[in-house]
Image (tube, rainbow, N blue to C red):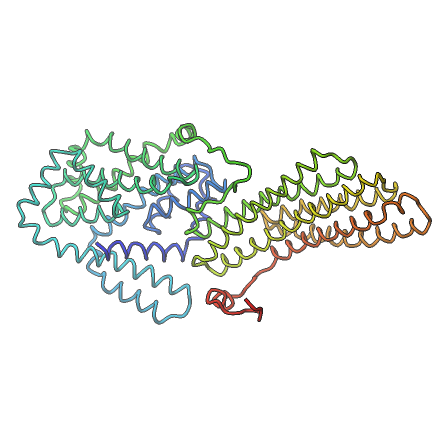
Amino acid sequence: MGLLLYGMYIMSEGLQKIAGHRLRNALSSLTQNKIVSLIVGAVVTMLFQSSTATTVILVGLTSASIITLKQTLGIILGADIGTTVTAQLIALKVTEISLPIVGIGATIIFFTKRDKYKKIGQALLGFGLLFLGLKIMAEGMHPLRDSQYFKDILLQMSDNPLLAIVVAAIFTFLVHSSAASIGIMMLLAIQGILPLMSAIFLIYGANIGTSFTAVLSSLGSSREAQRVATAHLIFKVAGVLVFLPLTGLVADLMRSITTDPGFQVANAHTVFNIIIALAFLPFTSYFATFLEKIVPEKKVHKSEPQYLDYSLIETPSIALGLALKEVGFISDNTVRMIRDSKTTFDKYDSNLIESILKMENKIDHHTVETRQYLIQVLRRPLSKKEFNKCLRLINTVNELETIGDIIEKNVLYLAESKMINNSEFSDAGKRELEYLHKKLYELANAVNNVILTNDTAMIHIALSLYEEITDLEFRSRISHIQRLSRGVSESENTSTIHLDLINVYLRISQHLAQIIEITNEPEVLDIKSVDEFHNGNNLYGIEH
């Protein structure tokens, strides 16, 4: 059993490393049609060999608003079909070649240096160990054929469906794998110990048990996770309630298809999940609405992170997607601070000042939470691409926090000084400052767009705006000095505030430009530096 579960774990992990990013893209882009959603869910889970892994990805994509709950339901139904592949492989006697597969996988891991091939080796090793575990279990079950007591227990399950369902559900919940439970049932059936009727009742329980795992893991998690887990449980329980009175017919159908006991159990498991999928698929839209009512949105305090979900950190690509949404939220607030700060020079409004300060506090709090979240992600095994994306997000959020601090400590201070001195900018000076701020606000919006989309055209627009602001800062400074030389009284009275504000706007634009540079940088660290980073080596000769 240990070999089976460990093999399943490392095979799933290896396959996710090989194709995880591409499969996540498929989940997010190929799910507009219900039938396509079903097929994509089945294929992805066939490759991952874990409906739990697929569910985790779905929770992340739903949390990030990349796919809708309605699309998610179709994929879940497909995922349940995908998990039945393992049972079919067991029935095909793949266990007979398990040792050669283990040998090939181990050889690839130990004799190749390329990370890509190591992942393939890991997947093969896990695949081999999974079936080697089943083979050893099959050999260990030979004595049970002669145990009348054990046979009597299994026969009782034919007469007591509820007992069979509960036992299988609890066992599956404990081992966190319906594939393992079904595999054991098949081995018992092949040995002639487990009657088909008992096996079908146990299949019902195994299917319910695997949904308990998702429900338990969703407790305390996001509402999206709870809806996905609840949907999974309802699908399974409803399916069992429909199939239960028809179990005799299902057993007769399985016997008419094949006389092989292993295939009979595998086929019953497959048919159960296919029928559930086809029955529920047309009603996913209504079911999504129902789930949103029974699992309503949680009231999130405005100071709490909007998107971060610590239960998804073990899936870095999803966690990084959520962190990007959170950085986008911080960026939105930063843009609003830049917009509103200009009004404080037109008319000093204490309510507006308080609103800007609240936004700055919100930015600080969300920055701390996002940075801590990203550092947790950084501690997980990451690909070079994921590692560099994580560093970019950390650096970006630091720049946004700095901009918020500049507005709080400098811009608002200058607005307050202007109010205390009861002074006004000259007409020409005011027009220059307003135009400079207009361009700064345009730059902030462009950078906000770049953070979320990494749009190449928008990057060029942002860089062009930054160059324009740099030029405007110089020309505004010269214009102000010209007015001073002409003795314009308003310019003389506001000279310090005017020049400082020009400088502050330039500083903000520089931090915005730094975000563009961070986003546009192909690699923060190369793969060698990534390894040195994780090994704690000093990369740049800086004392720690």
